[in-house]
Length: 256
Image (cartoon, rainbow, N blue to C red; front, side):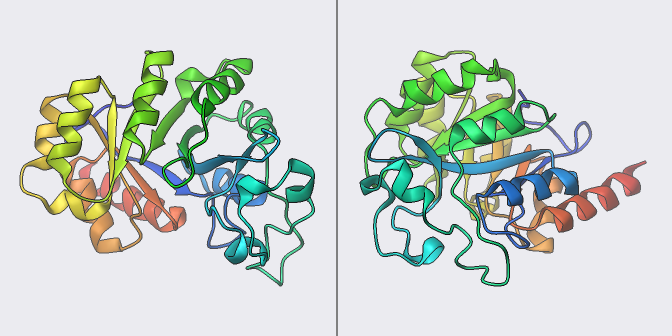
């Protein structure tokens, strides 16, 4: 799994945040396939669980924004969720369904992509979801291409305990040095900070010294993209993978 780099060695990976969500409904198979077609190195997605135990890809706990229905995903069965249109925010597009993790992995296994699975259990806890996710990953023997992240430190620590060889990362918005200390204490592989943390003096270089990978979210500004590349960030998670890939290619050409 990729680790912290310097500008002199490795160009950053580009991950499509919830797929190619500027062109297709987020976290749908259409968005994931489009990200692959664009040439993204990886996909970031969000994972929850239905009332009857199906692991489902969806960002929002409440489905009003995504499906036009004021209900929490955790309270629906898989059958009920499957009747909703995940493309509600894209009325000009064909209807989409919320994909299960199984559906995604069956497609993903045949690509060369990396996937960052964010476990969404910091608002509503999903007991034992870590072991369920690991089981699904292992059905396809994909540990070397999967990154697990969460805003729940407890969740990523549990996953690291279950699978020491799996890349696990703590997601956070602020207090970068607290996050780094936690990563070192619990043996995590990476940190996934909000991009503003790259402007904190010494943070990225200290991560590099400790071999902690840094993957930024959500990097949409060309200025921030260029700054992050110069900082030696390992991965940029972006809503606009086409733009990020273009900027990375320009940077690579200038160095050649």
